[in-house]
Amino acid sequence: MAVKNKPKYRKIINAAVNVIADKGFYQAQISKIAKQAGVADGTIYLYFENKEELLTSLFEEKMGEFIQKVEDELAGIDDVKEKLLKLVFMHFKWLDEDWSLAAVTQLELRQTNKNIRLKINDTLKGYLTLIDNIIKTGQEQGLFRDYLDVRLARQMIFGTMDETVTNWVINEHRYPLLDLAHPVVDLLINGLRK
Image 1 (cartoon, rainbow, N blue to C red):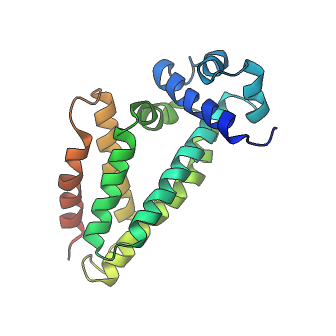
Image 2: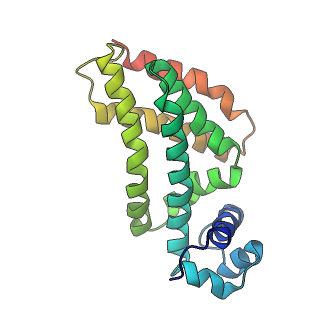
């Protein structure tokens, strides 16, 4: 495999997002991804062994960037409610700004094989750790119940955000996703409150 030449690598990743969102993972052809990226078909194989690796790499790349942004933003916030609102707002904004990425993450990644899902779970762990830390801080600050099961609370928070975005994608983004951030956080906070 070639060393990741960032400009070409990024072009391929971004083209893959658009083609997979448009055609679906199984119908997306490497030749169409290459054409949209402005590279030869063979160039893709310098970076990725196959389409499955391209899909997992695209998730790792996009999610990794997002996790870093969230960590940076949350680092300066002490108030747990504000942290949770920032997290939900950023999650919704990230996918609201790129419908193709939302379609790939919410629909296509779930319809792929088990090996792909296992690989993306490794990337997702960093995001889930962020959520765990918010919950633990909420417990330390006395906002959330101290006996709260952190794993269950994390599933509730992530699952609520995830399902909200999935419904938005399925409904072809007919309503403003960002308008749901405050109501979602209100429900989550009141569900976790002491």
